[in-house]
Image (cartoon, one colour):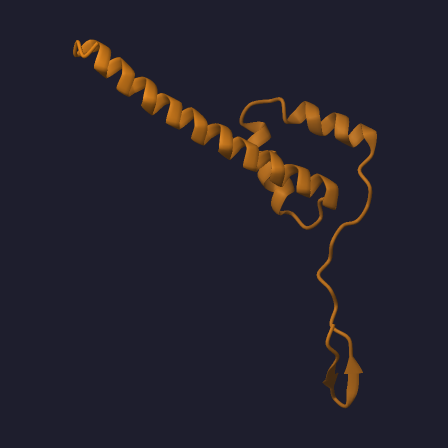
Length: 95
């Protein structure tokens, strides 16, 4: 990091706070239980993914889970569109 001078004194800038504490087995047990509840899981994942007080391992896990949820939603949406087109073709007698 680059040193700066304040009032003639050399000051080292502080790195942003990152919670490096380890997550216990009990905490992971509760995390997995809470994320199995619909809608609660999405809200908690958002909180854990973007809170700086959340341990780094849980924050990264929550971000990965949100990405997987987004991928699943996009795939479901695409399959619904393809299925809808297929159903429309069947109803119009195209096959």
